[in-house]
Image (cartoon, rainbow, N blue to C red; front, top):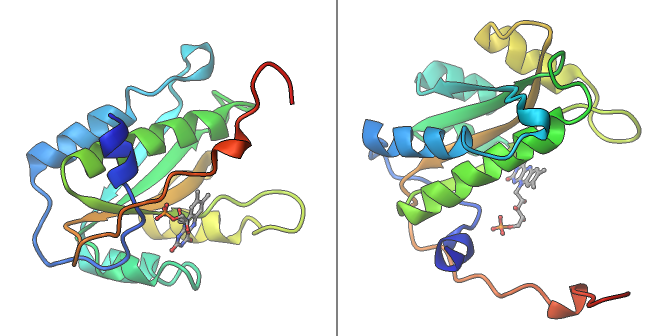
Amino acid sequence: MLEAIRRRASVRAYTDRPVSEEHLDAILQAALSAPTANNVRPWEIVVVTDSQKRAKLAQVHQWASFCAQSPVVLVFCADGRRQPHWWIEDSCASLENALIQAADLGLGTCWVGIRGGEGSGPGPEREQYVRDLLGIPEEIRVLALVTLGHPRGEPSPKPVGPMDAVHRESW
Ligand SMILES: Cc1cc2nc3c(=O)[nH]c(=O)nc-3n(C[C@H](O)[C@H](O)[C@H](O)COP(=O)(O)O)c2cc1C
């Protein structure tokens, strides 16, 4: 497991090789097996392969251009009415499961943030852009896009995070 976790790295260049249905199914199963507060399971995932839709997703903001190039984009959404407080945690857990399962299959992914929030970060426009493009109902929140495909080139091995971030017994 640690090997798959450490193999995961953000991949922003992909070959044209399609993702098999078998691999896609394993990744979706992993996403839908995440922990979820009160067992609500608010997840909704849109699988996008259509090249015109991906080209439009690539324009959602300036750090999303490679959506046009990856053969699949997974759109991680949640029903915020059913899980008003915990939908972000539930969705992140689900998304991370998908990233790790993809890495274990030798596939590349990149998390592309979409969710709008309060304060100085992105506003609601990005979520609305994705909703309008894919016919997602207004009540559904859009957490992120995940590009998925066969990596072009080998991602470099990841250094382990500094262990001084770990505090034992007390800070
Ligand atoms: C909430 C979140 C939003 C992100 N949004 C983007 C994005 O819009 N575009 C992008 O290229 N990478 C995005 N990333 C990927 C990060 O840039 C990447 O995870 C980070 O640089 C660490 O690199 P690694 O994933 O290879 O470990 C995002 C990651 C997270 C967790």
